[in-house]
Length: 144
Image (cartoon, rainbow, N blue to C red; front, side):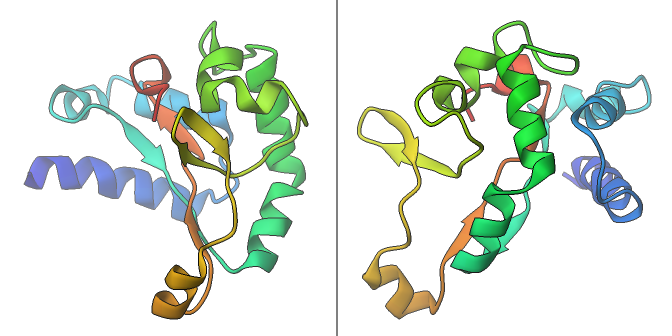
Protein backbone atom coordinates (compact mmCIF):
# COMPACT_ATOMS: atom_id res chain seq x y z
CA UNK A 1 0.00 0.00 0.00
CA UNK A 2 2.80 2.43 0.82
CA UNK A 3 4.33 1.94 -2.62
CA UNK A 4 0.94 2.59 -4.25
CA UNK A 5 0.72 5.86 -2.34
CA UNK A 6 4.10 6.90 -3.74
CA UNK A 7 2.71 6.59 -7.28
CA UNK A 8 -0.45 8.47 -6.32
CA UNK A 9 1.74 11.20 -4.82
CA UNK A 10 3.72 11.36 -8.08
CA UNK A 11 0.51 12.12 -9.99
CA UNK A 12 -0.66 14.60 -7.35
CA UNK A 13 2.70 16.40 -7.55
CA UNK A 14 2.53 16.46 -11.34
CA UNK A 15 -0.97 17.97 -11.20
CA UNK A 16 0.22 20.56 -8.67
CA UNK A 17 3.06 21.80 -10.86
CA UNK A 18 1.14 21.41 -14.12
CA UNK A 19 -2.60 21.95 -13.40
CA UNK A 20 -3.38 22.29 -17.11
CA UNK A 21 -1.77 18.97 -18.01
CA UNK A 22 -3.00 17.54 -21.29
CA UNK A 23 -4.37 14.04 -21.81
CA UNK A 24 -1.31 13.18 -23.92
CA UNK A 25 1.11 14.37 -21.22
CA UNK A 26 -0.83 12.55 -18.49
CA UNK A 27 -0.82 9.35 -20.54
CA UNK A 28 2.91 9.71 -21.25
CA UNK A 29 3.62 10.12 -17.55
CA UNK A 30 1.50 7.22 -16.31
CA UNK A 31 2.61 4.89 -19.10
CA UNK A 32 6.30 5.81 -18.69
CA UNK A 33 9.03 3.40 -17.67
CA UNK A 34 9.44 5.30 -14.38
CA UNK A 35 5.76 4.77 -13.52
CA UNK A 36 5.51 1.16 -14.77
CA UNK A 37 6.20 -0.48 -11.36
CA UNK A 38 3.15 1.31 -9.96
CA UNK A 39 0.88 -0.23 -12.58
CA UNK A 40 1.86 -3.71 -11.39
CA UNK A 41 -0.12 -3.28 -8.17
CA UNK A 42 -2.83 -0.77 -9.15
CA UNK A 43 -5.20 -1.05 -12.08
CA UNK A 44 -4.76 2.54 -13.19
CA UNK A 45 -4.34 6.14 -12.22
CA UNK A 46 -6.72 9.01 -12.74
CA UNK A 47 -7.10 12.73 -12.24
CA UNK A 48 -10.42 13.39 -10.55
CA UNK A 49 -11.23 17.04 -9.94
CA UNK A 50 -13.79 17.78 -7.24
CA UNK A 51 -16.45 20.16 -8.50
CA UNK A 52 -18.58 21.85 -5.85
CA UNK A 53 -21.72 23.77 -6.67
CA UNK A 54 -23.80 24.23 -9.78
CA UNK A 55 -21.85 27.32 -10.89
CA UNK A 56 -18.57 25.38 -10.97
CA UNK A 57 -20.29 22.52 -12.79
CA UNK A 58 -21.66 24.90 -15.43
CA UNK A 59 -18.25 26.55 -15.87
CA UNK A 60 -16.46 23.21 -16.24
CA UNK A 61 -19.03 21.79 -18.67
CA UNK A 62 -18.67 24.92 -20.80
CA UNK A 63 -14.88 24.98 -20.57
CA UNK A 64 -12.74 25.01 -23.70
CA UNK A 65 -10.31 22.40 -22.30
CA UNK A 66 -13.12 19.96 -21.56
CA UNK A 67 -14.67 20.46 -25.00
CA UNK A 68 -11.26 19.86 -26.57
CA UNK A 69 -11.01 16.60 -24.59
CA UNK A 70 -14.40 15.52 -25.90
CA UNK A 71 -13.50 16.32 -29.50
CA UNK A 72 -10.20 14.42 -29.33
CA UNK A 73 -11.97 11.41 -27.81
CA UNK A 74 -14.77 11.47 -30.41
CA UNK A 75 -12.12 11.51 -33.15
CA UNK A 76 -10.16 8.69 -31.42
CA UNK A 77 -7.26 11.15 -31.44
CA UNK A 78 -3.79 11.15 -29.93
CA UNK A 79 -3.63 9.90 -26.36
CA UNK A 80 -6.89 7.95 -26.58
CA UNK A 81 -7.67 4.40 -27.50
CA UNK A 82 -8.93 3.40 -30.92
CA UNK A 83 -12.47 3.18 -29.53
CA UNK A 84 -12.62 6.20 -27.21
CA UNK A 85 -15.64 7.53 -29.09
CA UNK A 86 -17.76 4.55 -28.05
CA UNK A 87 -16.28 3.58 -24.69
CA UNK A 88 -15.70 6.88 -22.83
CA UNK A 89 -18.99 7.65 -21.11
CA UNK A 90 -20.38 4.80 -23.25
CA UNK A 91 -20.27 7.07 -26.27
CA UNK A 92 -22.55 9.66 -24.66
CA UNK A 93 -20.14 12.52 -25.42
CA UNK A 94 -20.10 11.73 -29.13
CA UNK A 95 -23.84 11.39 -29.77
CA UNK A 96 -26.94 13.33 -28.83
CA UNK A 97 -26.07 16.86 -27.68
CA UNK A 98 -22.40 16.29 -28.56
CA UNK A 99 -20.98 18.41 -25.78
CA UNK A 100 -18.84 17.81 -22.72
CA UNK A 101 -21.15 16.96 -19.85
CA UNK A 102 -21.10 15.36 -16.44
CA UNK A 103 -22.53 11.84 -16.32
CA UNK A 104 -23.79 9.47 -13.68
CA UNK A 105 -24.76 5.82 -13.60
CA UNK A 106 -28.38 5.16 -14.54
CA UNK A 107 -30.31 1.89 -14.70
CA UNK A 108 -28.97 1.11 -18.20
CA UNK A 109 -25.52 2.71 -18.10
CA UNK A 110 -24.27 6.28 -18.06
CA UNK A 111 -26.69 9.16 -18.48
CA UNK A 112 -26.27 12.93 -18.25
CA UNK A 113 -25.89 13.85 -14.58
CA UNK A 114 -28.89 15.41 -12.95
CA UNK A 115 -28.45 17.88 -10.13
CA UNK A 116 -28.10 16.49 -6.66
CA UNK A 117 -31.29 15.26 -5.04
CA UNK A 118 -32.92 17.34 -2.33
CA UNK A 119 -32.05 14.59 0.16
CA UNK A 120 -28.38 14.93 -0.78
CA UNK A 121 -28.50 18.73 -0.64
CA UNK A 122 -30.13 18.59 2.80
CA UNK A 123 -27.39 16.27 4.02
CA UNK A 124 -24.33 17.87 2.36
CA UNK A 125 -25.41 21.42 1.65
CA UNK A 126 -24.45 21.80 -2.00
CA UNK A 127 -23.95 19.87 -5.20
CA UNK A 128 -20.70 17.96 -5.45
CA UNK A 129 -19.21 15.99 -8.33
CA UNK A 130 -16.07 13.91 -8.65
CA UNK A 131 -15.15 13.93 -12.34
CA UNK A 132 -12.88 11.29 -13.89
CA UNK A 133 -10.96 13.72 -16.08
CA UNK A 134 -8.19 11.36 -17.23
CA UNK A 135 -7.63 7.68 -16.53
CA UNK A 136 -4.74 5.51 -17.66
CA UNK A 137 -4.23 2.95 -18.95
CA UNK A 138 -7.41 3.97 -20.77
CA UNK A 139 -7.96 0.67 -22.54
CA UNK A 140 -8.32 -1.36 -19.34
CA UNK A 141 -10.24 1.37 -17.47
CA UNK A 142 -12.53 2.68 -20.21
CA UNK A 143 -15.75 1.76 -18.43
CA UNK A 144 -14.89 3.75 -15.31
